[in-house]
Amino acid sequence: MVRVYGIFGDPIEHTLSPLMHNVAFKVLEMNAVYMPFRVTAENLSGAVQAIRSLELGGVNVTIPHKEAVTAYLDHLQGDALLTGSVNTIVNRDGVLYGYSTDGEGMLLSLQKEAGFSPQGKRVLLLGAGGVARAAAFTLIREGVEELSLVNRTLQRAETLAEQIREKTGFVVRCFTYEDSALPDYLGQLDLVVNGTSVGMYPQTKARPPLPLDKLSPACLICDLVYRPLETELLKEAKKHGLRTLGGLGMLLYQGVLAFQHWTGVEPPEKAMRMVMERFLTEGINQ
Ligand code: NAP
Image (tube, rainbow, N blue to C red):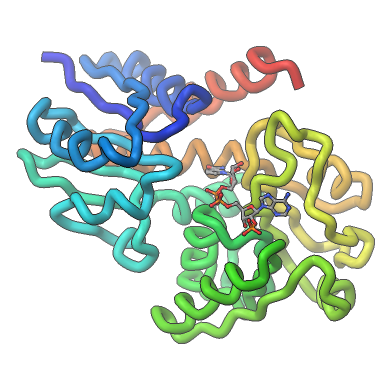
């Protein structure tokens, strides 16, 4: 019988996850399919129950359900416990397990694609939403020496910093983009991660307002936005001679990890990356 997987979100039209998982099933000749499901907030509990009743193998969860879905699961595992956010649900004989593979996906991308290890490093994270949250907990777990947040809404960054302090004891410094102390601070950084939606399609000309000329030439700029593949931030960073990393790797590796949780099988990374790259370069007018 065909095994069904999918993704719950709202909106869901623009997800690339079906592309990467279906190509993986095809390459591995697995009798399985991955479908996008539009699930509204009021239908979330019923949709999670349907994972059991329809015997789905598992699903990914995306905006806006990553936190709310935790209330309907039987067990939270690993990073999901720490962050209170789930992007992957595994159905093991009717028992639902929630995982978060976002932070680990970002870490694998940094390590494998940029040769960057967070241990002992000084990192500035732009944003204080869901993705920034996952990134922050992973970077702290991986032993960064210093982590700071910059967010348009200072209050949101301070709330995240407080939750991080309560859960890990790690003290995070918060800035706004207008903070007069920010430009001088930039020179000592090893990594800047954009965890905001600034620069994402269709607003591709926008970039976070950071004075890139203040960064040290050794600093890596990682933009978690993957649509477009090369954002305005990355283009500008390159002009300043900085090393850059786009968000496709994080998307790929969070998917690879979800696939492993569902099937216990190593998925074909190369084919998954290629199908998404092709779609993003040929399928969208950037
Ligand atoms: P979110 O929870 O809605 O958070 C959005 C963040 O962006 C907030 O910090 C928000 O600041 C900031 N922001 C939005 N518009 C801004 C503006 N005009 N100027 C300054 N800051 C602005 O979204 P999320 O789930 O964290 O996702 C953020 C982005 O990450 C997505 O858009 C997507 O491109 C990317 N992403 C990548 C992956 C991947 O696998 N690579 C996965 C998921 C998402 P305020 O708090 O001030 O509103």
